[in-house]
Length: 210
Length: 118
Ligand SMILES: Nc1nc2c(ncn2[C@@H]2O[C@H](COP(=O)(O)OP(=O)(O)O)[C@@H](O)[C@H]2O)c(=O)[nH]1
Ligand SMILES: [Mg+2]
Image 1 (cartoon, rainbow over the protein chains, first blue to last red):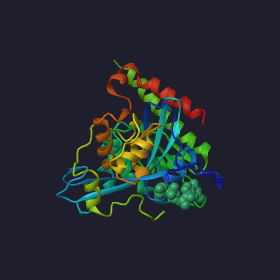
Image 2: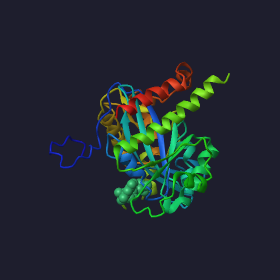
Image 3: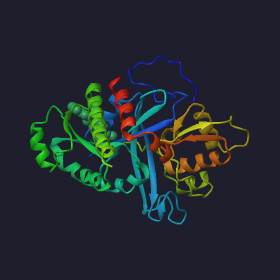
Image 4: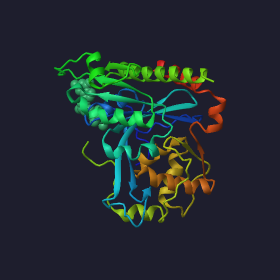
């Protein structure tokens, strides 16, 4: 299963298992959150050097991790699935991009999985704008800096303007809000740059305050 | 797409894999990069063998979890075993000491630089 396959690749999808550079030493995290079907996996795929991989984390009511008495299949067990992609930024630094569901039980695990994350992208579908209210609320609560990206589906008949969306989401002026097409690499890249630009400005402001 | 990515179906299975332990090293992050320091040896637990094979080149904890189709928690425990036996080393993300040496803004500039090259 792990052996190298020499079959010619028929798709342009990158392979799932491309080893990192031997010199890689720093892993960084950015999280993409949003409702089901909003395009999180699509966005991760469009910028990732590997095909998005799925994984899962479990937590019992008794605490994080595994608890024998609670039992893993017990009702008290919270399971959250998420996917991720990867961008090697340099020989030393690797950025991991996580696509994470915005629903309630997910935030249980936020501190465990995404502590130390650089920041977050909230992905919005204007046909289901309320799907992201909760995520925005939780990110503010966790004091995680974020940007909001509107994934414009072509049947987006509402065609709300960004300022209408900002109003609908009660989004403060300082939070960047942009349009994107999650399927397009350059657009996904622009979303990430917008986030990191924003983080940089926040860091500069912080470093300038004694 | 509808397939569950990780099989957690049998509650006892994970318990067996971890030998009943529920403690993992606190500093093992989702994106800690794990590197093998030796080859697998005869008689090792099969999950340990797979981790050692996978980490001949650095791999993040979350990549190991995806590859082994095990929950992150279980993988952290298994990697913790190998760390305790000095069979792997971990390169942790932005440890507090290094964070002081490298201002956040400098790190972010490095990230921006990398992203612009995409
Ligand atoms: N037309 C269109 N379809 C999209 C766009 N973004 C995502 N999709 C499709 O919407 C579906 C859900 O996207 P997915 O990335 O799986 O959503 P997730 O649940 O947030 O991860 C998939 O079939 C995508 O191909 C977009 O910008 N335009
Ligand atoms: Mg998805």
